[in-house]
Length: 499
Image 1 (tube, rainbow, N blue to C red):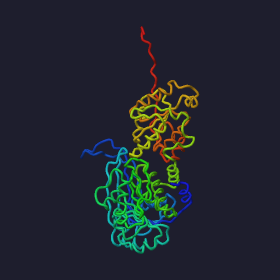
Image 2 (image 1 turned 60 degrees about the horizontal axis):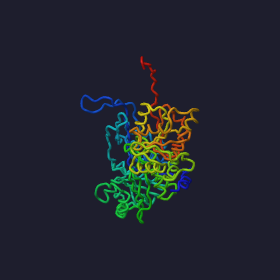
Image 3 (image 1 turned 180 degrees about the vertical axis):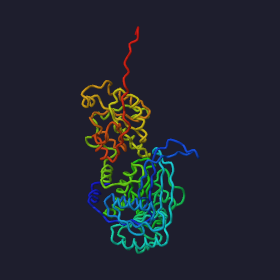
Image 4 (image 1 turned 90 degrees about the vertical axis):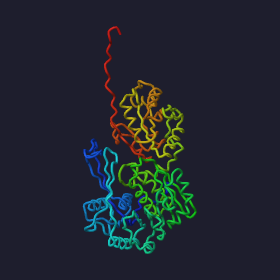
């Protein structure tokens, strides 16, 4: 991927894009869950906040607006409280809504998630199919706008908003046409430029269960059947944690690879991916570059729970991060003592090259790489609790331990415990996978070298105080601050009689 060329095409570009299709309100109820209900063995959630976000075609539209596009949305909603909330969120995002939004006397489709203590407990769907008159109004508004924009995105999630579209007229009017549909084969006669089925939708085309194992090879084997079924110029198969495969008449044209993230954070990531692809195509980029842009946008939003958007700044940072080689050192980033490594309890390594390999292997299995660092002079239970919590943020925990020289630079004195002993004690903790000793005053070289998915510091450090914060943003990771690591009070030594 040529990130600089892609960024040059995207920066300052504000294409106009029409999104047409099924929209829902994503409502998230969050709070504490510390007791069980007397009527049944279910938790009681004391709601502390309610968050609303446009879902479905609405999520694609707000992501496009966040990326900088001028967005028109044609969709179906009701004249009810959720419909008013949906319209407000769309307006806040800068989406220009057309068509039968907030139809009088009709309900709005809502998907509600109940979250207690950060854990999803229940999802409730209250969705309806568009009436014939609503679908007619969608079709008329879509055709009126299709010829005026740089790209058209159809979002068909089975709720009927697209049932009356004149496909031939739309194909003639649209400059670039992208289809995101639960049943992509139903749009074969449209001959879209790009169709974006996921693994389950693709499996429905070729028959059988969704693929497991090497899904990229599965896509290549079934390329002809998938292309014939979708009728599109390009079929861009999305494989969540395994990235994407771009299929064309010549077979596999391009592949992308996803950054690992918790499965529960994937809500709405497919809509963000489609938005990234559409934005890139509307900006004049070829379809393989568009796949890279879509992947980078999706990688951004899956780092955060709930339905969220990818801004232009975050997309650009993710694209720059993806450009960095994963196997070769970044110039100036490797600590001077790059070969000094202490073996971790669950598979320590002996060189920085091996640490990089362990990180890449973790990512290939969908596990996030977590990095933290510290002096750890006099390890105590606060440190242990902190490292346990840090390990829970991903699948591989790498800990950087300051060398004796760097401690002297930071504190002006020699640590009580030498670097080899400090590192060995940290490595002995069950939560820790690998420990490395480093000489720099900050962890910036470690961050640039390992490109962690998550960088963690204790809660006594504010994000704005960290020299590492900018480096984390550069590599496309996220910064987490955990609980304050407090040193326990020292007990006075009592001299016993006769001792």
